[in-house]
Length: 195
Image 1 (tube, rainbow, N blue to C red):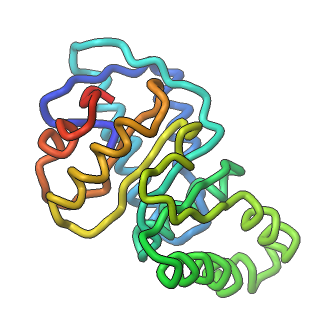
Image 2: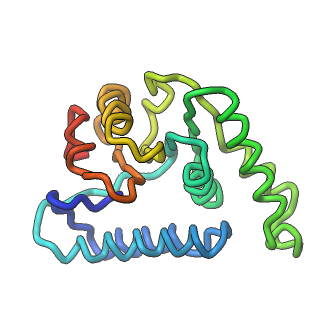
């Protein structure tokens, strides 16, 4: 999500190492950790491409759009690092299901069963998440990073990015979790596709 096919990004080695540390040992399972390691490697490779410098802002809060399997996993990766998350969903039933999934996944994790993750730690992580049904995404206005994890529908994703371009602060990094859709086309729907 940080690397776009036509836009070039460079990170300093200290920023690359910070991202790799953030992505390691998430405790959410090999799939999530593997995906985040791939992200960190992608950013390192992007650092080898000549282009503009990207200063990495502090990461205090993250917005995640979509409370399905991917959105829940992404949210948990940030919760595991003590970062506040705003989880957005289109309807209350899906939001409640996503929030329940997060709690259930923590309680079913091997770390919890083995005693490496306590109930107090689970509750502390869960306390960092806020749910939102706001379709204008104004609840994401202070997020440093927003990751869209909605259905693979180009129209839906473009609509989301158009709203994010208006709702998010200028320094927010806007990301998509698409598997195969054109990232540049999605980004162009926002007011600032370079974000």
